[in-house]
Image (cartoon, rainbow, N blue to C red; front, side, top):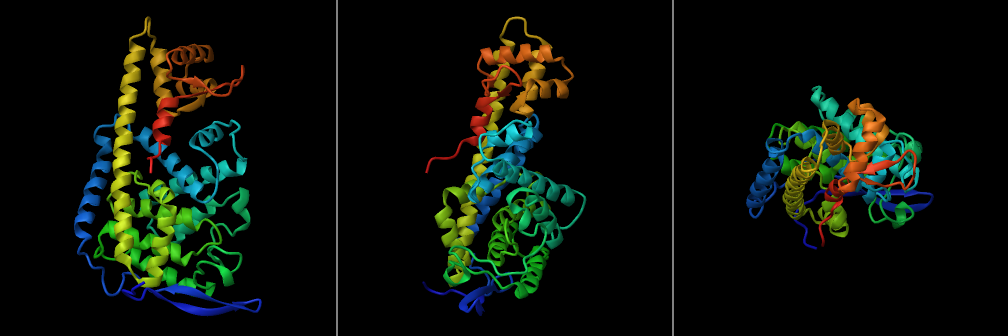
Length: 385
């Protein structure tokens, strides 16, 4: 492959008598600078798509409902890339203190992802900068409990890690040795806080790949690296809410994604990676807008069906509204949130089930759980490739 620019250097290392080479990336931004010919139009299209997505609040009656579910969808997809089997329904069952259909550790990892993202967003809204300390805080939450508890949650690694293979000597890629982490991470943090010379979407593309290359944690690097994109866009004011997530795009093109990362390291072809990233922004933003419109249409359609029933009670509409906020839930949970009595909620759920709006998903006679299945279907839909 033709080399365009140097993006780093290899360091000769050895462990247990075996020699290998670890890669130390050069600081961002790339030198020489990106060639924007062929990228400018794509950048403009991606910025327009992102603006359209950010305008969701203008036509959704309650954007918080969409954000609540969209964050959870992203958590599931990002964790699936790392090998968990949890689905959105499993996560929602877990959050309602019900037994999911997959190993509990899988769902715990996804739930931690939601908690970590929410922590990062809360800190940013408080005025805390997007910095290494914040990434460590998020990482500590991400790996708390479960399988990640022994992988130094909240701490940068003090030992060598690698990607692919059984050891550094036969790995596909070996990140910087631990003694090089401080300099590499410091340079990345400085780039995140640059004076705006780099367009935000391009900055997100560059920072994501650089973080993946540094791989500063023993575990959870992929999830933190994907979270970094959404957090950066919120910090920079491009998005008011965290509603752009590229995990689905990366998941459905996993092989291309990893090839793109390695191509930059080997050839310095940042332009091809940025093109891949911007196309992902365009596609993902379009999917987000379409999903929001489909959800809005579904809510309006089902409300019309309910209002067309005989003797519609305010309680029935209240339960339907609550299902929009928590599409997998129990009668007890609805009663606690709405203040309605349990018999009233059960009657409303039975009526909603009779017209296909709600569906009982446990098959039990007691402690039953209901799902707003069509709403979940829109969120879980993945594009056909």
